Image 1: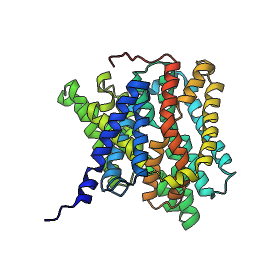
Image 2: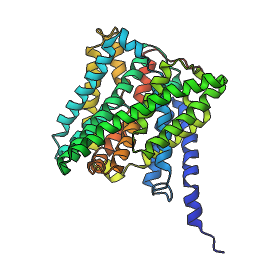
Image 3: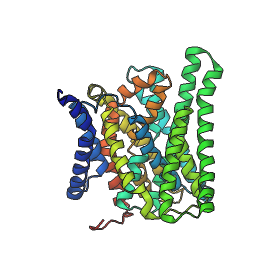
Image 4: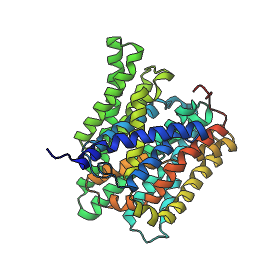
Length: 396
């Protein structure tokens, strides 16, 4: 029997890279307080650059696993959303919607300085509206952050993600209409996916709490039930060509409204959640093409500046109206800097439906994604620390 060394290396690539990412993440976080997710991204990028067998090639099941990981984060984000807050302080909701529109328009206008197709510019603008729930929630959990700035960042991140999905689906519908002229296909591909995804998540958000109460599940088992429900929801979304990210976010929001109690110890879904988050950021980074990164770095830096200015500007301008201060508005806008994990998976899902501009947009945005996923969590961390809302001790 001939020993196949290449097969062994291919089989060991992912476990070795994940172990290295975990080790560096812990050491750099302990030594210099660098967010762990930034280290995970850096390892994924260098592993991709090294073209390791089994890592940079297509492996069945990895996209689904990444969507499960992000769906767990989106459920947690949705669970932290308090809809009653919007009723008591509608300016927060209006700020989120206004800032999303301003960001879309500003990025679309700025991208016009480069020779890009209109469809690609629309995709870039739609994705730039979003913030990265994985990066923001992970950093907030590491810092045990709680307070006005933290809650505003969470709520604005959720609004950004919802608007980004809506905008991208409308762009996809517009593209189908312009290429095929089929209004039914265009409507089905956007409105149907949005409504059905939200409805599926909301339905499970009602059913899961009822199941927990009827079976008298102990509190320590609530995490397991919700994790399995998210996996079920992601599988169903894949099967019916829906958006697992939008469904998971809706699931979390409705579950919160149904008064299901989750303790602080259950945030992040424990050790399994930590492992999936580690995989998610390494996987996302491995999808970036280094040639595209260097080719689009100048464009990426310009769009980052425009995106950051729009989010910070809107947050500062509406700070007093929404019951905050200009300083907290500045910190809130800066904390929304990360974006790539959510944006890349959303773009990948759209590409799988036959949306041709998705691949072009990913190549153009590679430089932007790299900078924001590496440095974005650090900006979020420093913003929350500057707001004095962190509760971390040396023992943590």
